[in-house]
Length: 480
Image (cartoon, rainbow, N blue to C red; front, top):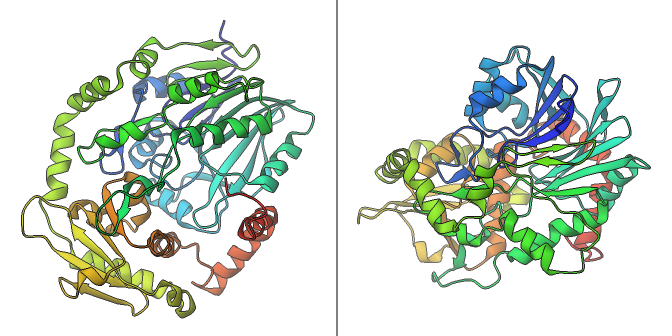
């Protein structure tokens, strides 16, 4: 029987509810509609947001924890609905080098929200029985793993964060002799690697990890932390946009991970359990309740189920797809965006970014525009120059790129997979995007003295992570 006082409930792709007595913490709520320009959708479908709000409204204290900036975790439409419907809602975020997480939250809601920033490895006491501890990770855009402690019980929500060896040991030491009940972690791609092809458009070999490799990363983490239950998480999604639907066949869904787990004896001491959207795991007995609709969707003949799912939202999808294509690149938006990138990128960093990259309109008609970016020279060329001299050409719907740049969120373009990348150097392409991401989120220490001091202070607390990256650079450890 479900203990209404102590459980976790998976609500969606990466949305987790933790309940202890009358205290409720919701992590990364994306529970309404799609993300990334109609590319990403929750799968299996979540419980309607109104029903979730009605259920959690009985709690005395409700927190929303946002682990990082990505739109499948920081979902504006869902946050606005929660904030409107739930009085005295409190927000929790990690204190990270980039201020963008905080400023975007103020912009999506307002500056009067109740907001608490938590430092790396700091323990935040919610009440005498309950606390949270945050562990940061990521060299450019910071992510968070959260360790929930209720008395001597622990729940570890790793989510998308990549905890390297010393960092993972830090979490393990924080658990100590405690009882790690549950670990939740992602197990699928959230990047543009699968979209990368050779410069001539031919397929590139080994540009992304295999499904087996993603599964093994999850299982190795479970083997390291040794929870009572390991839950495949933060990968409950699919692609419904006509340009990304094909990537469903590359997704390492939780049922595929579970099949791989059952097929190998290497991880026989791990207890892997599927807890799907709408399902509950009671934390005393570790018994779960099943939602048949989610099970039927996940274990169905996948392509037919996804075609039905697309048909359900076809009008919304076709409207977005039409608008994204039937426009042109906005010179005004492009110039404004790259003015920011150029101003935030010192000469010695631009020196390493020599070479040109082109953006080309992905349209069915013949009137296609392009522009070329030269970060080193701080120049933009519209429909001029030799595109064949660019190391990378990115084909993208103009409406999507205009939206990404106007929101200073080129980072989300790669995650959406709404682009085709033809490159002679994946290294140069990745470096270009890294420069854009650090500039647009404001994480670079060179913006101002104030930002440098913030950057230094936060990274000093993360010295284990710095050591991990040094060991990785010298190939003494492998990047997870």
